[in-house]
Each structure stands twice: as C-alpha cells, then as structure tokens.
Image 1 (cartoon, rainbow, N blue to C red):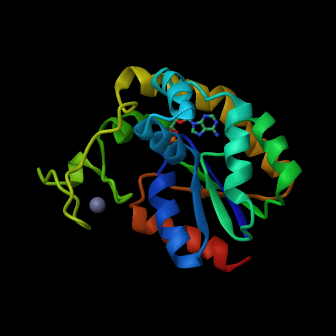
Image 2: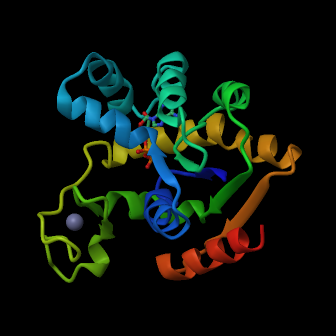
Length: 205
Ligand code: ADP
Ligand code: ZN
C-alpha cells in the first residue's frame, strides 16, 4: 500500500502517521522530518531548507522530489507525510509511484493556530499539546525533554497556513479526480477517535 497523508499544518498528520505506520507496517516518510534531520546535521540540503522553512515557504520542488524519490526506492508499502505539497510534486510522484489512497485530515481552520503554537515535540516522534500536559515538560512515552519546533511561532504559522491554502489544498481536488481521496472529518476529535476513523477507512480497502 502506498498512502499519501494530506492535511493542513496542525491537522495531526504526524500523530496519525506514527499510529498508522505502526499498525499497518508502512514505512513512514516525512519530508518535514527529513529536512529537520538535515538542518540538525548541517548538510547542504539542511542549509538550503532552513531559509524556506523559517519563512513558512515550501522548499524548492526539485530538491524535495529527489529526496522522496530516493526514500521510496525499494519500498512497496509506505506512507508519505508532507509530500506532495503542491500539484507539481503530485505529478512528479505519479511519475515514479502508484499511489493507492490519499487520506485527507480535515480540521476546522480556527483550531490550527492554537494547535500548532501549543504543540510540544519529543525526539522520539511523540507530540503533545500544552493544554494536555498538566505542566509536565517531559515525554510521557520516553521521558526525554519536550521542545517547541522553531517554525511553530505565530508569524511562521500564519505563512505556513497561507502556503497550505494556496498550494496544498488544491491536492484535495487532484486526488478526488483520481478517485483516491478519503476525507476524515476530524472536528475536535481526540487523536484516538481520529485514528479509529482512519482505521475504519483503511480496513475497508
Ligand atoms: P507541517 O505540516 O506542520 O507544516 P512539516 O514537518 O510537514 O510540518 O513541514 C515543515 C516545513 O518543511 C514546511 O513548512 C516546508 O517548509 C518544508 N516542507 C515539508 N515538506 C515539504 C514538501 N513536500 N515540499 C516543500 N517543502 C516541504
Ligand atoms: Zn519521547
């Protein structure tokens, strides 16, 4: 199975991706995670990506598509999280992979800003919202200290949401036209409730 996970920043892609890849044994490929690892490692890709990420813009398509192309090489079952992010990338992807399904996580726009700005991350991949942490500053799963992503600040988030609306949202129609779109209406459901809805869709395939 080749799955594309679609959704605005803060829609919960990362949280669901973690659960989906564990339950369905899909390789989790997150372009955001790959860029952040490159930034941390000080690689040329990282240096390039940082300026775009800090500005809430997309990293150039050619670089991004090459990264994904090599990440999927040799894998039959995977989930793309954060890719494609515009129609150009989707067309490129269609050139080297046969996507089976696009899961679209739909969340009320008004919730996104608070969700992202209140988000706390762990190096193990877990993420939390401050409102559910009861003051704790460590990961409930592994005990490591939580941190805030550098691009999770109001100014950058504003830009990321604009980028999503203008460039990424058109992919809903793109995959709809291919008959591959499954939209999950998340509303203000808990991560567990959303995952149950996701499983219902995936189990029915
Ligand atoms: P979010 O979905 O919360 O914005 P991501 O971790 O998916 O977080 O992405 C973080 C940033 O990495 C994006 O704002 C963008 O700058 C860059 N990025 C991630 N995926 C792509 C992509 N497919 N194409 C271009 N840039 C990307
Ligand atoms: Zn952790």
